[in-house]
Length: 165
Image (cartoon, rainbow, N blue to C red):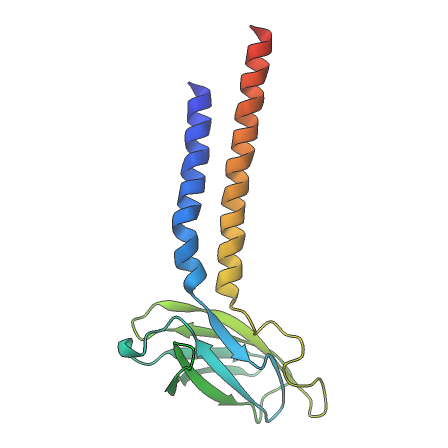
């Protein structure tokens, strides 16, 4: 009976991960370029927001910022976008978290502000991909790993019990 309980728990974990992974992985916000000099412009895009639900709100936080930026246009590849002018920003890394017009999260991304003449725009940074997808894939992988571990334990116990009988 214990083997069935372990196998059942592993199946529930894998099933739950399979159900949650697609929903979380869909949330994606990007910032382009990921690195810009002071006074440069970055484009914030919430790829999963539907323009019919209203504007997306991008919350920009960092060394000297905690401000909201409202989407201004429908993005070419889908979703909503806004431009952010970085004049007056302190050097450093900023996080952008997007919320769609229907109140759902569209994930987050980061960009860096460098000195004028510093790193070229688009070099480095993690703004090219949304962190929501990375978290979702990590969580899904952890659930799959837990399921696989449970299966290995189950098989070893069965093999050990068969050898003793």
